[in-house]
Amino acid sequence: MAAIGGERLSVGLRDYTTQLAGIVDGEDESRPIPTCPDWTLRQLATHVGRAQRWAAEIVARRSPEAIAFRDVPNGRIPDDPAQRPGWLNAGAALLIDAVRGCGDERVWTFAGPGPAGFWARRMAHETAVHLADAEFATGHDVAIPADLAADGIDEWLSFVAARDGDQPLPAEGQTLHVHVTDAAPAFAGEWLVRRTRDGLAVEAGHAKADVAVRGPAGPLLLVLMRRLPPSAPAVEVLGDQDLLAHWLEHTQF
Image (cartoon, rainbow, N blue to C red; front, side, top):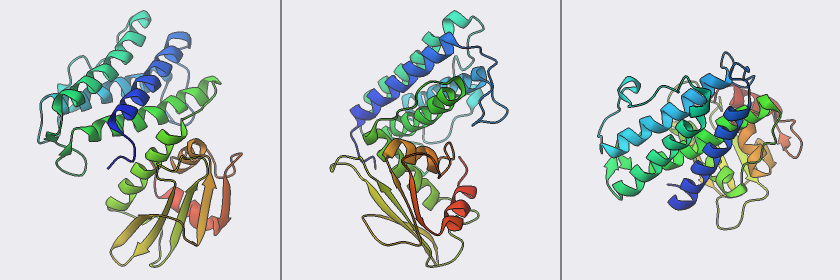
């Protein structure tokens, strides 16, 4: 469940997409994206625009199952560079309108049937991170609003806890504390992740842990998403740094 409202997420999704469209409009499409190895700016923009349309199609169809990417209408970025910013912005608008039109109806999500608003949240945070990828690559300033970044952390930790595979906390009883220093009181700002016998448990709140990572929400989200190193300015690591390194290695986006 998102810690912030659906309208705020829709505003974030629209703003992030508009900023990305501006970068795409002014930069060389072949520019490499260091934080997404093997991608160019054009490939990154294609991914964002197609993913937003894919989510919009799931919601618009009220689909109870996943839809193949190849079945997404207009999922190819235009060949004409002048049309690409409009194509990107249109994808965000399609998703926002689809979510609003769907109301409380349930659709397919990664976690099973869920409210359509899942996709506004997922694509807002997906777009935020890929906007940061483009900004890093082109020398633009990177600034994710604190409330949206804190919600992105909350979503990401829930995804990590739910998935199978190698455990990012390798031993039972190990703990990670994530502490946002600039989130407003109304938003989630601290989490404790604990390795249990059955996997990972995440709970909100302050607690002592084997390793803690703290800082402003925007940079902290990008550290957890492996876009910034833990040594980034304004981010502080306390405790077992090797455990944090293991966590990051085993939570690739």
